[in-house]
Image (cartoon, rainbow, N blue to C red; front, top):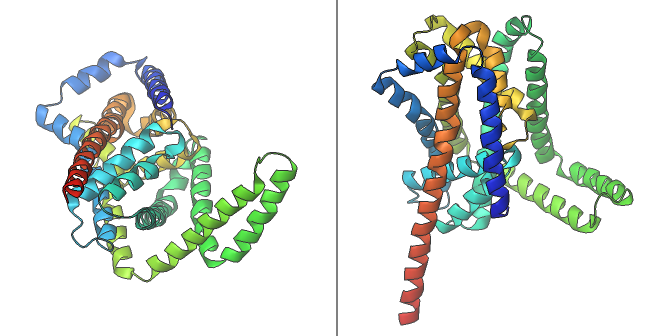
Length: 348
């Protein structure tokens, strides 16, 4: 993506976020700002670093996967890869840029592009699987009770179905790759005749290569059950941290929530994530804030917007900035190492 596109994405994020905040604050901004202002420094610090800690937990997945290819792969390296993914996913539509930035950093860390692609595929498959199991449990325990109160939960259900179809499609692709290749050949021919594709043959070769690569990685991954279990456990911690944060913030703002309502907050947070499946804007800006306000208002009342602001800053804005800084620092570091290695080679 060109630098100008990144700049426009930042502008789009800022404008839509500002509009969403206006929507959230227009009725009671004084009450919301007063509630945030009453937070003590320690509570505010915990909230603000929560998103960073959640991203560090994600980095542990890359440590587990990275040590399959590089025995001394460090925790610090894994955390840099996680923050890089957060940064590029956060500034590209539908979070499509994360893996490109991560593949670049992995290569600089001494992991080849093919092995890096294997790691990223494994991370994606394990995360999607863990998330769908996690959210499915929440759906069966909490969704229908909430859905009876608001029609907006139809969008949540649609998002759940989309995510389920994606993970179901991935696994059936792994089980029946030849059927998918034949299906893609038929689809490419149809799209070529409709002149939607400029180069049908090139597109077909690309799709076939991706499907072959994906099925190969699935087979490799299925043989390492220990790594799968470790990564799934890490992802459970990661998801729980993400989904539980609104409850932590609410309690710090002295919103009257009972301990047993933690599961309600975790469920609603996961439902916001499901609804975001339809928002192609970088960072799902605007839609995230709107859905959070709608779903959480019955539970948190007039201070929902205060929770929203702190939650969004912690889980998106701060780690977006931190991810950008870490990526640039890592790139500069690896460039210096490459330059030093080049000079050593010239001497010899």
